[in-house]
Length: 327
Image 1 (tube, rainbow, N blue to C red):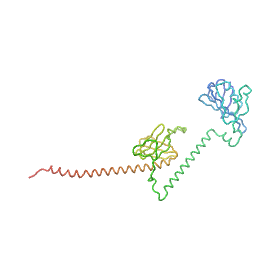
Image 2 (image 1 turned 30 degrees about the vertical axis):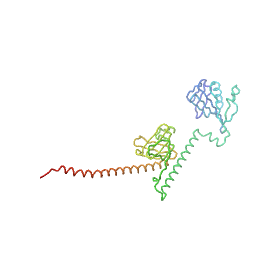
Image 3 (image 1 turned 135 degrees about the vertical axis):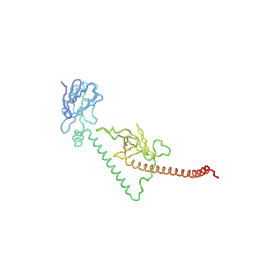
Image 4 (image 1 turned 90 degrees about the horizontal axis):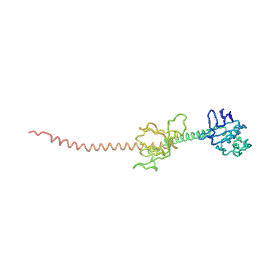
């Protein structure tokens, strides 16, 4: 027969036996118990208990226990049976009335009940206590998405305003100031953009945590010849002549090369600034490439024109020497 039996959460059954604890069909050995953290609350006049038990590397949380006396009895038995288990008190909580274990000879300071400050039942405290565990994280994520959307709209508005200004020359022809980067570049190569970027995966399995998307953290550098990414785990070098596609995402920029299987996504703080700078560098790179092509074509034509008179002068000499002599 179990020593203590009750329900927690959404009707989950837990049973305490002399040598193990069974929670919803899962068995936990008491010899592996290392920490006990009881929390007793009173919300809307209804008492409830919460037990956090640590079994080695596993953590078991029994929340929403309506039978507070069963929870106290369970804590007293675990403290008597498992001397290696430590009793933890939640920080920022007030101590409640002494339990029945004080009369049994157990240290009252070790088994005092803890009542949080939210027991004053203020509206804000009640909303925080009744909210789910991931409520604050979800709210923070929504705020970040809203800020990113507003930043993107603001950047689009600024870009449209610059393009509509009369009397302003093309932004592609505006000079870019060179920047200093912590890497040695090739001879004659200059860097014009540098920022902190995170290399991420675009395709993930469904319901995957956001940590799986992050591949590396590093520095993104744009020069007049190529793109460089210096990360902690990998390095990427991409010449502009192999660049096929550049697409701006909500919080980053995706690049596609002719020798890559998939796109590489770099998340950064100001993706629009990176795209505009890259557009100017690509325009300048194409202009220089076309100029070098025209110069090479002109040099070839000049060489052909210089060699053609010599060949014409040699041909009559050959014909004169080869004609037969007639009498």
